[in-house]
Length: 122
Length: 110
Image 1: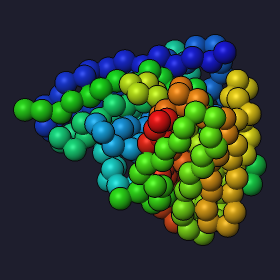
Image 2: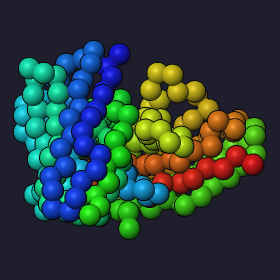
Image 3: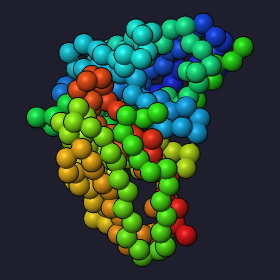
């Protein structure tokens, strides 16, 4: 059974770069969309972006290219970097494995990492 | 404001059947499959329904999903106290070129 374990810094100052890593245990990268999703305190879920097993990545346009998502198959890990953070980036960040059916672009996410609260404060 | 619209809250008593809706548009629900997640307090979301109406292994058949046009719904029958959670719908939006979530429905078991 695939499990995801994530880590990274939990407290940042404005303008710094958020850096999180997610390790994949018990499965391969092939055929999946490795994703990052965040949840601001008391709010709903927001898709940040994904990296495919090929290494190609995409992110939500609202992040204005601040997000970089990459894959390291040799370590069975994928990572998120988010530059120039502000208080609006304060959230619990989750990594997740995405799959999509034929004929639809919608991904379903399963499993999820445990989540990390990242706080941006001066 | 979320691209997919969910009622903020729903409630029911143990044993009841409750349903919640997720409303979108042609570019998202109208063109792609819908997934549902359950988030218990203080925990990561858990996949509940995928491809509109499929249940992952381990999800009780009390949970069911459906989709029609630009709307989807999640129904829970035989409501139990442990079903008290936030429920999110999600799909892909072809116009935004990204995955979108509803704002979530908070289910209270009275």
